[in-house]
Image (cartoon, rainbow, N blue to C red; front, side, top):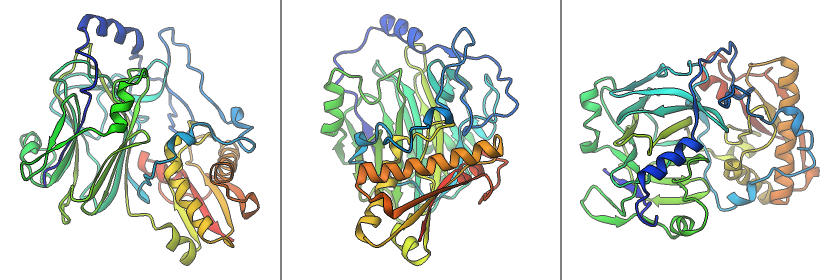
Length: 416
């Protein structure tokens, strides 16, 4: 079933002047293409961004988070209505940490051009889609009927005719570019388009209004729109449960469509398409996470006495919880509220990058931060929660690839 979901930018007041936008972008999006000389890159241990003087941008370290056990993580309250919970196992992960800055990443396919870059003032590495075309991370499929896909998007679309589209579909040969380019007429797929149109079209030809008041209100405010802020990435989350598909931009649920996908669809491909790429319209994507399996928190806690989650995320080399972790924390809090006699041990785990001692200390601080969040944000009695950290000592996956490392970075709730 074809579903085109168009997230509108039509409320922007007029088409921005190209010359002014170009100047603004040059000032705010300085891309450092210096060849990366690091021999031990790690998404869990270090940051890559540098400024034009090759001075490292300051990032928070484990030492900066010594107060984590006393103060609730900032920013979680903003996500109070966020109910997104990632899949149980990470099967595809891309942060470009194993690639070389300036190169096209391994494990991707395209008919165009892109390169790994760092952006001044913004953590991590990014894939800059430099020319119009399609860009495909070769995550292994087919994906099951329950999966989640997340990525960060940094761009601005100030002109008509500029499209950035994500397609999740079923393609027999992802290496066949002719077939890939024909995805727009495929039957087993759904699309999310980030542009300035007003409506979308379902597979039966009917149209639907593609804007929610929450998105419109944000765009009409004095702050930048969700998808038109050149300085702050938007976190995109897509959640498929059988036929149902939910789409979020940051903490805002844009769509919740009960019949977005055919029930037996065997999606196996993720395709990004760009129709316009110039100085005035730059597209960057980063931190891709594909996870499978529907989490069943209650069953696992009550029957298996343990729940393992990869949905509680932290800042790089830090115990500060990222706000998009709210949905996962809420899941655990609801179980603890429902079963008032339940007590748990919260255990943090890291991947194997870095020193053993540092990993152990970091894992303990992260577990402590989760305890604080559950207490401060959800009112869970601290006396019902113990904390511990195992560092890198108990891996559940390999540490020689990004997806394996992402699985090893986890939080476990163990019934006491």
